[in-house]
Length: 477
Image (cartoon, rainbow, N blue to C red; front, side, top):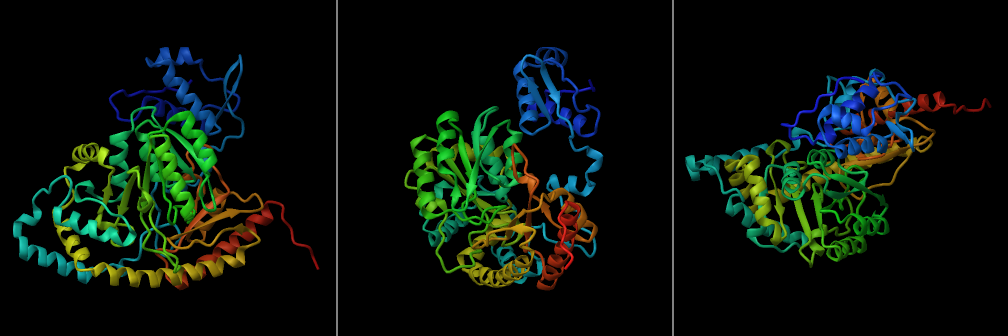
């Protein structure tokens, strides 16, 4: 068998290290289909690790379709595994969360808004005002919990979403991703179970995996998570928390019904766990319907609420906050402290004024107008693709989630679109365990209306070609 190295000094769990290396050997053809892997005991002895580490690695390989087990015989590499060299290099980058942009590309992948939409002049003025007011104190380390006037402003800001909390429960963070990492560090120990939606945000999955969590998926329905399946897993596994994006879900765009939001919290209370709510786009609603965060229904103090200002306000700002259940405040504070001590004091002070003086209201109003036009433009274009895709119209957010018909492969579609200077996101990166290769995610966040029209036309042409290649033929009439 190929040389495997296990580094016990790394933060990456040992079974993840083993899984990743065997996976790579299978993908690059070094371990061919039908190859019998070493027994658990022999490989554990060879590498100087526990049997359970090998068991967990083999189990993860089997869950992801790389190996299969024959009772009484052993573990074998599956046939017809996609070889690494067959994958477009830029797909590998996208799968790792990077976007290979080049001149002239139409970007249906990025969630970042165009820079010209950012309130540069307003924010520049606020920074200058802070510098004149506070001088060098603006650059001091802040309290790890965050600049107190900003936390007071956040307390008032969330009242519009019917969230009522205390300043002491608010933790300022450097963006939503850091919030997920802080919660992971504070709550997840190796092999702890957590529940995620299927599909879900790929970078959250990466954070949970890095802590060695056992990730349990529960299917999404049109109105939110499958509650019956969720309760079954809550009974069996007693997870540390349930990770959810209940409003304008990434990648599907789904909004939970009010009934499901309430029942989800009831289940968290019943089984004594928490719900980690990731809210990055609740201000981008395109309907008149009032859509509240899950936290607004939290009468048991079971919801950990993460809100990012980065995605739709200013991506480079890297600012957000956690509203923590009272029992968890000190744990999150410690996890934040060991991560980066504190978030930029200057940015916190400037954003305090941004919220306190309600400058955000006019800014978000302008962004909603622009995004709604792009949303409508893309939706109209997608109507012309009904022979090839199926989708639901989201009520807001930044994404369309498309199911591909005619056995079209998302990875093939990705590669062929990229050849035509159109960048999309294959859906398999949003699944933790059994990957799905018949979905794509499209974002309208960074494209002008003309680009959206051009991009949809390219997508249509590629889909037509893919369908014909998969044996779909039009009659001659």
